[in-house]
Image (cartoon, rainbow, N blue to C red; front, side, top):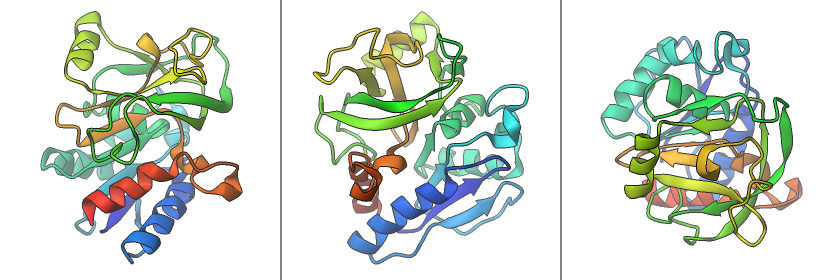
Length: 234
């Protein structure tokens, strides 16, 4: 399996994702570290997975992810996503995916108007995707968040469509798995923490699985996401 991580000016989780994926690749596939693709590149090797990492692409000017969505590399990402290449956007990467039209909705300022950086409980809404196949539906995992604009919004019809089509990947919850306002760190509609495109080949999520993918980091609940991708795409 070959993967690529798109690196924008202001990305700060690109190396974290590279390390997490490399650990899974070396253990399960024998593959090499993901390509690190600079935002100006328009032509890079064929890959089985593309990752848009967290950070503050282009300094979050205009809107978070708005400038990155029009970068040369993203034009290629959009093209390959249209051909079925799986894409995952984490935190700022999720914002880029909505700004580029690969995912519906938008990420706006947190309801508290404050930057939130802490571990949260997240409920896996479906295991029926290559991104979540190593989790159980309804499983509660602990993953960090770190964002100022993570409040997911969409119009009522779109929210109903996401529900009806099983396209909500993760929701913020309490440790028991209950969806409460106190467990929602940013005010996201329906406690949404991650969504799929219609084909479930594109995933955007605000929590950072790469930050808890190794016991040495204090937890490994994020590991299953990367292991599952390697197993599915190898």
